[in-house]
Amino acid sequence: MVNVRPAGPDSWPDVATVMGERGDPSRCFCQYFRLRGKAWSGSSPADNREGLHTQIRDGELPPGVVAYDGDAPVGWCAVGPRTSYPRVVASPNWRTDHLDAWVITCFVVPVGHRRKGVAGELARGALDLARSYGAPSVEACAVDTTTAGRIPSADLYRGPLSVYLDAGFTEVSRTSPQWVLVRRPAG
Image: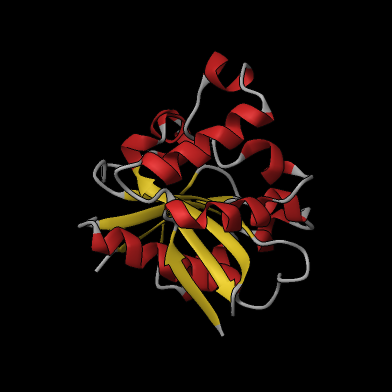
């Protein structure tokens, strides 16, 4: 049984474990949507790692949720107010009139834990976190795998549409066959 908890200061070692030592998560540390332009292009993997560490350690809000199978960390989901993600605010894929919504920007589920429902539990945990801080709704830019053909797992970091639909989200708009803006009331 997977248990999902908000990321707090004592969960940093678990988040670092989920991000791993190689691949996109180990370089990005969920900073892509928080940084734009030269702030992103000039950041190193070490800078990104420290950015997430600082957000978890010192932030007013948890920047995401961590999934556990027993004591073992098995997943991460970044979620927070839209305003904390400058790249989301500027992106045509995220156009909305719900400016006070929270957004889910990414999932990390390490190999060996995928296809076991972890992403779905993370989505529900992200909704719970948003609700606990008074968010009126939660949005995401999902990947529709049925229209995109075969997608490498690294490109599914935003989350498959099916995960969101199973968690009660509904489609709002599409900017392409594969990018789908979804929304759900947080309550």
